[in-house]
Length: 156
Image (cartoon, rainbow, N blue to C red; front, side):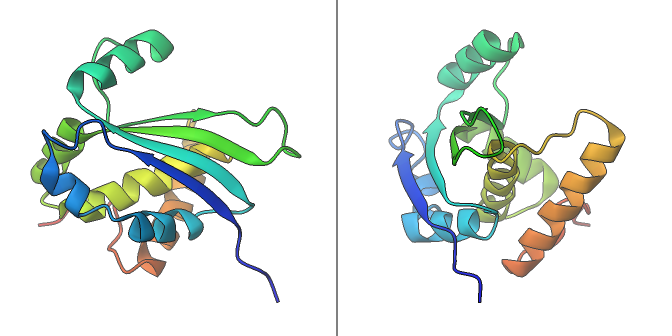
């Protein structure tokens, strides 16, 4: 029998005042359940929910892209033998805009982006079509196991 992977989770919500409805759909136990469904090893993760200014600054500083993006992942493991460790940065206004544009519940979009970022923290990427297809397949399986629909199929 396989034991569940351990998770040390820190959540930071500096954007809570501006986005109280976001914090309401992100209870710690729910976020931890989403992450644990994604883990292939024990992990120590920090998730920070930020506003547009901080999101843009981080994306510009670390990716040289001058706009806020939905999720950034900073993975700290130097080899496959190291424990999973990383920071996920989610930009609340971008997530909200995307969820509305895609007709998805806010919680479902957050779940997808947290699954996506957690996979990045474990070394997954989507730099080419093969990697992207593999990562999307894993994400879809995890999202379905969590009770969500396929995040890559548009909602009519």
